[in-house]
Length: 388
Figure 1 (cartoon, rainbow, N blue to C red):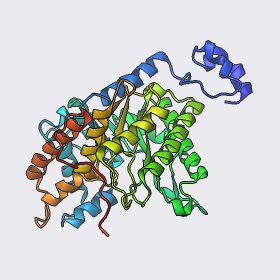
Figure 2 (figure 1 turned 30 degrees about the horizontal axis):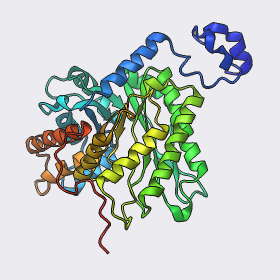
Figure 3 (figure 1 turned 135 degrees about the vertical axis):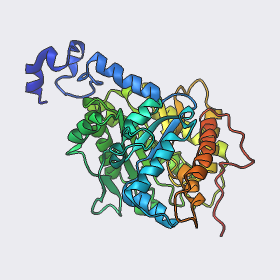
Figure 4 (figure 1 turned 90 degrees about the vertical axis):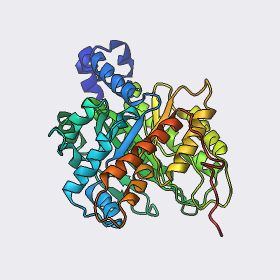
């Protein structure tokens, strides 16, 4: 809205929030004033379902090509039916809903049905008490002159896709903005950070207007040889830029969820760090910029093994104090799924029964780490420098 149109709209243009019309001259920082109270309540309720202590998100939103490469690496045919059967196992493994609060789906999966009862997967998930959501973004684009750094595409048509996904049964969406720390190339640059975080803020605003909870995902790659101090500083800059952009855009912060990387040194960093030191770095970032208005952060695995991801998440939760009110849990894909594919190696087909048995054990580990109750092995979650 322009200043003129905001003034002409009067209180109805702000849905009754006349006390906030002081912001109308700027049209920003309105904290979701475009939403009715019932719409805000609905968003908060979804966040509360997602942010249940000890439960996390199964991230199975890989597109056909990505999941196909994982299939083909162990000799499984990348067919739509195999993708459907695999996702059904992830959703319907007995007991999985004790550890899962939500599932992120690829758009293809929204329109696939369970062979158990013929219901579409969003309805199946809802019936199990698992909140269904979707990946709505398109492909990454390398910005010229930015040493390979990218932005995510898909904002222009996002509202129409959100309407479609809402009708299909989704309650939330998740938008990923990948970033890479490359100190030699001065990346991520201020322009890359601001472009991606403003995109996440606009995405969040559009989602909320269409009735979906936005999960915002600033995803800093594990690649590189930077140390933990550099990683902490850059992650703090990224996340503080994100939250300011969300506030400036007028996002209703209580109706959003964070999905970020665990703050880690680069995978090739030559310095050793304990899981406790990594946990401290993550809490430093949260304490300096993560709004208490937001209920939960569900970390991505981002190339970490299940042992490392769970060991670090467990250490973070054990180190929490009264200064850390958030639910800190998991939204893992590769950390959980890659061991499942190894079960199928040399068999040439999906070994669903064996995969299901391993999957439930992995979810138990993830759940315990989300509560800070995982019994870890000595050194689990530590960063070990690569051998020279």
